[in-house]
Length: 440
Image (cartoon, rainbow, N blue to C red; front, side, top):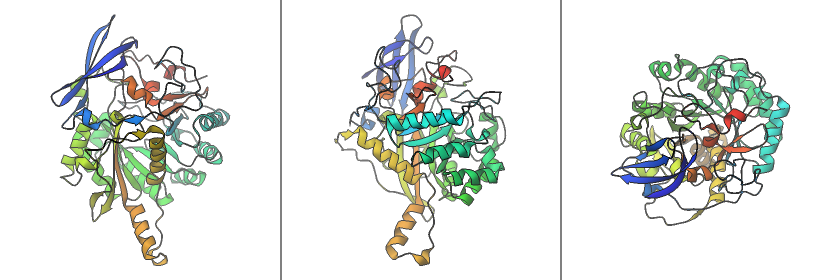
């Protein structure tokens, strides 16, 4: 049994919550005095939750932006009660989009909306630098590539010294506009986080409303041409693309080293959702890992996927591999006997370095100019491939212990940093604690 705090999915009131293990599943129980009880699956699979949890020594926020007044999660900013530094800061450069997806964190749409100015965005970059130092940056939206000046935004981040800048994109413009891709690379773009839900258009028509696969392939080809790393990001939705997990990984391997890995996101229910979720509408992290192992026909073993060293252990998994003769060879394996208490701050530093190194494009040096040792290092750099997943929380399953350990923070126009899930969380009527107030 685990005790934590959560929220009411109807009124967003803070509630005491209990997580109970029942067979191979774990469920969150909570009760609102006004809206009654709620039970939601949070973990389901052969790996018990208790065996996955890592013990970490909390980090201290050196430059808290907001005071603790109401308590978590109502003082996000970051406040001094938060327990992890910023690993990735996310800047929403537009609320416009060129798709109308069935599932969308931002509830974005193609409608008239005033984008933030370059001066406002520079302020956000500078606020991140002051609060968190030179962390990794992800430019998001909406769809950031609807902005013609995205290269100018990237340049601001580069000029301020941020070492890794990634664009979170559906790939439509990057598949259609090669000159745009070239401009982004010349500005200093390191990587794209490419929405990639499968390799057939039936999936895209269901989740994204239109056929997109060929545009995704073209976007990857353009990134290969100009040396931009690509991470494939599937939103995994039960009854839609769970059975496509293995073929997504194989597609990524075929397009390595441009494609640096696959980052799975089990569907969560905030932003734009079709209806309140049932347990059968969810897929949990251990289930994703089990599908990876099963659909890769034993090429990937469960022990090759590990809990994170940065964020809360229940938030994600990661595995690092080398591609050798068409197969994945694990770089390391999880130990079932480790009792080490890790420092959260060290975990954040390692995570930032890993992402910057492994999700960027690796230059392929000419073999004849390399020493034998350099040939080995070059082969390792170009054959590295990562498999990871992150389970974002919604109002039904949010665990405030996880929120306090979050290392992915959304920058606001006021210069605050809000944990990603808390920024995007909505009640069943679409009311948000933070997102609705993001525009000045």
